[in-house]
Image (cartoon, rainbow, N blue to C red):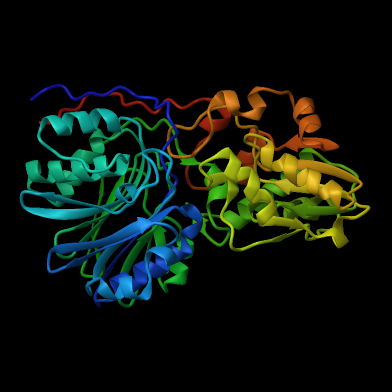
Length: 476
């Protein structure tokens, strides 16, 4: 036995993905098809890789690759996967480790008495230390993703405890950072786990043929499951034979964070309900409060698709300024926020959004967007609106200024590259070419999300990201 306490490690490279996880435990053999549909519904959470692992008679078969869900899984690919009643799926948003097939989830890990498949959404801040320790025990790694480390650690702990549930609990007690996990273990077991702070969402649904676990409730709706509840922070749920068989708590830790508030601002689909709050309602409230905090005389209110549209509706309702469509969006170009390079982000703006000139020309426009990170995208959008004849452009942002790097799974750029750290509000306004600029206050954002059942992590706005452990643990 030796001391395995690991202090909080802040990773200097680009951070891990904000992904999607999905899993089913059914009484029929339709697990692969249902999981495929679930991943399609969660495509917005990760567009650079996808994978499905299915259990058949205790064996696990996995197909994964880089690309969109529809690219990774052709009809032939789906047909070659065996029939099974337990499956887990993963959509990846790659940053750490590179966008290669080996880094796409789920991760299938073999151990002395079996194998498991793990899908992970979040970022493990002590993954490098855990990897090093496990390597010293002879554990081999084929990828560079922290999700592979999570799967290997769980397998190691199951071997030591001879129990899937105890192994998962022991492993998660050693993890630091953010994790929502869906794990296929044994012949008929699906395990769902959420970290004690609840950084990333996870929910459970059921229907007449079984249970599903998903990052967002929209995937449950799409696949015909009735939303049951959210997995609570620090909870482990075991599903067997299509029913919840066990609900328990992880080891107690001091809670120093909460749900990432940016789930409501940008990540989640508006038709999802996360921790008791409708994403659409939260965004509508953000726009409503923006109109209270930053009123302006204007002719139309326009939202930047997609997450700015609901906030624009709220702004219009409070201000009385008519709502109008400002852009036509190409549905075949991915989110610019998750493009790996700045060059790709810049070129994607023109491809994604084309101004609807008939609604813009000669008008004073309130333009509502979800965030400004580097400033490049919003500057190009403002310029394009001016090119079609907008008379004035008043930018309203439904999140506070980003000032700090996130260490729990959101790809915020290095702090020196964040525009809010380099310029004042007036300087940003001038740089992007707007006539006025207003960010929602942090208090206004929290009030907009007031119906959420959890506290929030707002570290990217405040810099308060102390989620380190308060006790030591041993890995034998």
